[in-house]
Amino acid sequence: MESPILSVKSFCAYFGELAVLNNVNLSITERKATAIMGPSGCGKTTLIRCINRMHELIPGARVSGEILLRAENLYGMNPINVRRKIGMVFQKPNPFPTMSIYDNVIAGYTLNGIKLDRRDKNRIVEESLMRAALWGEVKDVLHRKGTFLSGGQQQRLCIARALAMNPEIMLLDEPTSALDPRATAHIEELIEELKKQVTIVMVTHNIAQAARISDYTAFIYLGELIEYGTTQKMFTVPQDKRTEEYLSGKFG
Image (cartoon, rainbow, N blue to C red; front, side, top):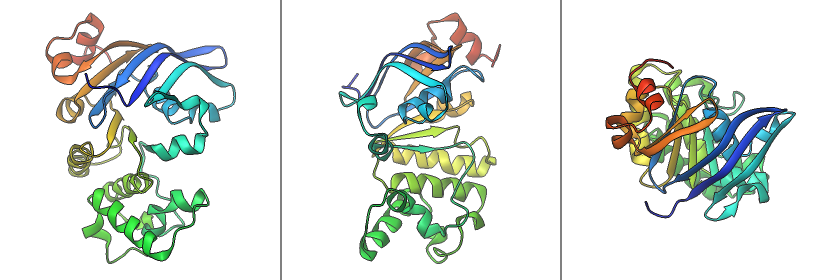
């Protein structure tokens, strides 16, 4: 394996006294797509919320262990800087409802008080929408509300908004679960393109989707990392019986 962009070391996450993640160790390879799989409530979303420093926003939430971005501990950094380097896209498309498509894309700059001149704004909006495969569809309606778009377009707008900050890693939390099959196919094609430029970590329930677009897969069960490796190997010769049972649909 190449040297990892992200290393999760002896990591535990809690809500009060309840441990949701227990001693997770994981290395994420740069410019690849890693799928995080497991049944509902196993800790998948908590893991990516810890990577993005969002877990701690919940009262009573705490963590132990380390998450390193290129050897720098995320928990020693300013959370705003962490979220600039590590973008997040949620399950339900969530463009800011009062903002135009244009303003949605540069919202990260506006909300963090980063001043840009008009030329930079225009360039960032165009580049980000092109990277999110949305520019051709919206270039003539940039000043309409983001909520005017279809569900799949809204999700690509949210991806453009995350890309606008030029993150090193993109976290996707079941980004297609609220979308129809055609919009899902669009997002999957987009992920295939994006992973050439940015590291993708994606929570998915969809086993076929993980098989199609991820290079590595982590299987989490009851807060523990059961198995991690290349998707091809895990899907053909899983090492752990629980992984095999999950992949064959015995539980989930």
